[in-house]
Length: 362
Image (tube, rainbow, N blue to C red; front, side, top):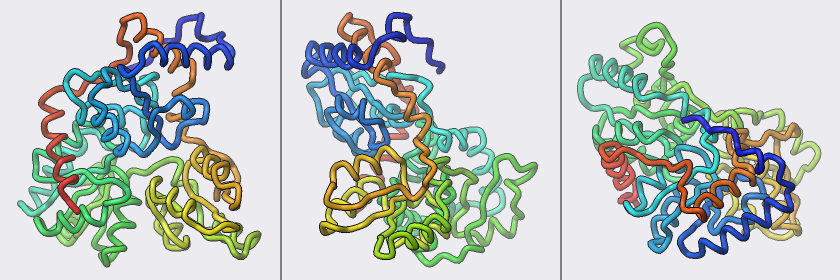
């Protein structure tokens, strides 16, 4: 889906007028509307959100709001899909800008995963459990659901991996190789047993049959463009400038970065780690800049800064501009639903199965 240009009247709105019109539309829609804001959104969006959180938490919160007819998800496409999968049939999920995708999610397409699965099955037979990261398209969630697999988040990947190993000899994990590798290392899996499948390789993902047979985790060549920017040199520099600093990074970072940090965690976990630390604490954080800045603003008694001195916001998250939110809400007020995200029933069914398997885990 491609976002059409905003009508001319919205393109010239001042920030003040945009905010005023968003607030008015939100008030008119009342309890029929819930606005979800992902942690990586800019503050100009977050201030209008009824709930903030990571993608899965927001989808759960939206599904619990049974009075909300309209769920406006200020995030990216796969998040809106997950909200549609978990919400009731009468609830409609709207993404203010259809161009807000996720480059990592796009690195694993269904036909590529199917080709990989067929090759692995041909070499190994049964015994492989497919696991997909929450940051993936709905059809990939359905793919793993239909084949006995599950979804994972950045906070519960070790639990999901252990569950998978109780059911098979190996895991096929996509689309983020770094989260998969970092999780495997935490579980004691040797690196040589975690080969990377390259969907763009000429033959068999660039792997040999013996590499596939000996694998405990087959990783997918995919990554987050924001978290891949963080380096060990940045950590070393932060510690040089602030000898008493603590470093926390997201597990989507490269393995050497995660190992060099003091700790790692999902966005929700990073927030808890920083906010629960004592006054005067210093934190160098390896995740998206909007979340880092918000942590600093909400914790004035601490020093919180981004590891990367060259600020790099999530460019696709940034496509949710207040003017797009204003346009979407005013259309709802006028009785028009724009940019609805609707997952086909057969895909939604199996994706829901994969999500449910994850939810059943402790």
